[in-house]
Structure formats: structure tokens, C-alpha cells
Image 1 (tube, rainbow over the protein chains, first blue to last red):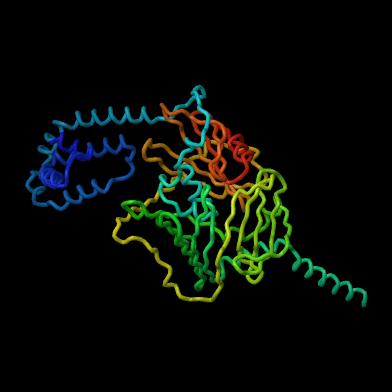
Image 2: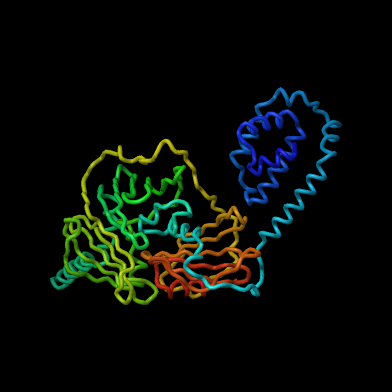
Length: 152
Length: 314
């Protein structure tokens, strides 16, 4: 199941497989927890930690709509603790490792010793041009452009 | 007693004459006309090396100002603004992309409501009368006092003061930018049925909106000796989702010219850029300081963007 969830977050699933997986996930609380950890890991890796994707919203909505299956799970502290104790530290450690790796990869460098390159027209960041035109343009032709791909 | 009365009337007469003959008043009149009158027309604007036609409809309805601008050439896109709420609708292969913008300063509404700052850095002059889009126009030229900004030439409608044409040129009298009505109609039409986006309803909508984090983001830099007359008018901080870093975007203006200053952390594996380049009529200057990429972007002389990136220190 973990592999399936991982595949889903890598967009390797078809719609029918997604529906089947959603059904499985909503029936099992440990799968739901795994789901959350994979979601956080995926979001951190992709830099989307502050937002939630429509897919995540769809999944969470599906989970919330399944009170019958949730009710079948015995809600007492012993079971809950035992269930979480089995996998939580491993998943948590794995997530922390990935989080650290992602932070190291994305962390800004703080030094003047980096070799800089000469700015050339082809490498002018499109997102900066877009942001500049979106907030300052007096020329409507530039202002009404949306998305970075429109800046040549 | 008679002399005092005479002096009083002389003072009143000269004061009124001075007030009415203030040449800068025409700039304020043009600003007010753009905001308060109902008009619609087609104008042409440069887009890099191309000329594109756009249609504008503007109306004042009660206290609200309604504007719609849509492209007539190339990919369909348009802007709707109601007061300060401005939305841009763009269409790509699969989607209609909607972006919320803070406001707009688009032709013909390009002149500020106050001339206080303009008077410090420009001189005003008048050219001979002309015709634009079939309407009589008077030519107003704003000439910079220094070489940190360009020359602005306006053809103002003699009847309403609405700018009918704008040319920006550099100190060598080379054309930087040109926008001009080819057709314009000023009327008192009250109908607002045109105020809706004309987009492909069969396509899915995608909303692009970036959260502004400026209220919680510290300013870790200082600016010294920026070019005279430029003032910070906007500060935005947004998160770049891919590398998950903050982008600081400051906007400076002297009332006519606008310049963006970006401050962004450089990530490992990324080579920072330095030097200057241009794209169309926009100049860009880049500098690397203590782990940060500084970049100034603006339709201003190269000297101005370079001055801004050299004004920053940590």
C-alpha cells in the first residue's frame, strides 16, 4: 500500500486506480497516516509545503465522507498507541531525513566566493520580467500577459 | 486708501492669473479626465518589436471606475478593473488563466494625480498643436533634469485633456516606447453590459494568486543614494514554490518611470548573475551580494538600473 500511495504522489496512477486506492485508504487508519506523511514529504520536496494540492483536498474530502469505515476502527488509546508505535518512528525519521536533504539542497548560500556569470538576454529570469510588468506596466500589451511562458 | 484697494485687486488678479497659468495643471487635468470621463477606443502599443492593437472601454458610474482592456491581436487576453480590483484573463491551449493584480497604471491613465514629485525631476514644455485619431491635440513634453529618466511626450485631447498619444524617448532622441489611439470616442454612455470577460467558457479556469508575505518579512538590507526623485511605492514578498525561497520585490517610481528591485537568495548549484542586459525597451542590471541575487528591472536608462543595484547593501 505504501508503494501505491507513493506512486500516486508521483502521478503514476490512472483515474480508475485512483478511485480504487481512495477506497482502500479511507478504510484503514494507518493508511491515512501514511498518506499524510507522504503528502508532507512530497510537498516539502516540491516546495509546496504551505499549500495543499487539489488532489490532497479531494482525498481528504473522500476520507471525511467515510464515517462507516472509520466507525469500524476501535477508538481506544491502547489500539491507537500500538498502531502508531509500529510505523510512526520509521516514517517520521524518513520524513525528517528527506526534509533535511531538501532544506540543504534549497538552502541559500551565504558567501561571496561563488563564481557569478555575466547576465545575458537569454537568461533574464522570466518570472522577474513577468512580476515587473504585472505591477508597473503602463503598456497594456505587457500588462495583460499571464504566466511566465508569455515572456520571450 | 485708494492705493490699498488697488494693490489688493492687483494681488488677487495676479494670483488668479498665476494659478490659471500654472503649466503643470494640465497634467492634473489629464489625470482627472482619464478617471472621470466615459470613453472607448482602440490604441496601438509596442510589444517588444511588434505593434499590437488593444481596445479600451472606460466608464465612471457613480463613485466607481470601470475599465476593460482587451487585446485585438495575438492570443486573447484582457483586463477588467473595478476601482483598485484588477483582474487579468489570459488564455492558453487548455486553460483560462486568471490573475489578480494590485492596480493598473495603463495608458491613457499614466499621469499621476499630483505633480509635486514630477516638478522636482522634470521640466514641462509645450509643442505645437497636432491631430491624433481625428481629434485636436496639444503636445506636452516632460524633460528630465538628469539622465536617470527618459523624455515623455504627450498629445492631450484639446477638448477633454485625455492623453491620445504617448512617446517615450531617450537623451539621443531615440524612440523607447510609443502608444497611440487610432480611434477614440468620448461619450456619456451609462450602460455597463460590456463589463464582463469575453473568454472561452469551455476551458477550465486556473487562478494564479500569490500570497503577499511582506507584513512578516524583515528588511535585511538598506538603500543609499538612489537616483533623485525615485520613491518606494510598493513592497511585496512572495514564496517561489519550486526552490521554496522568498522573493522580495520593491517598486520605485518618480511618478512616470517605474523600476522593480528584486532580492532573492541564491541556491546551491545556481550561479548568480552580474552585469547588465536589455530586453526590448526594458533594462536589467544584476549584482550578487552575500548569497543574494539583486536584480533591477525597468523601462529606464541603463544607468538607473545600475545605480539601484549598486545602492543596496546588507
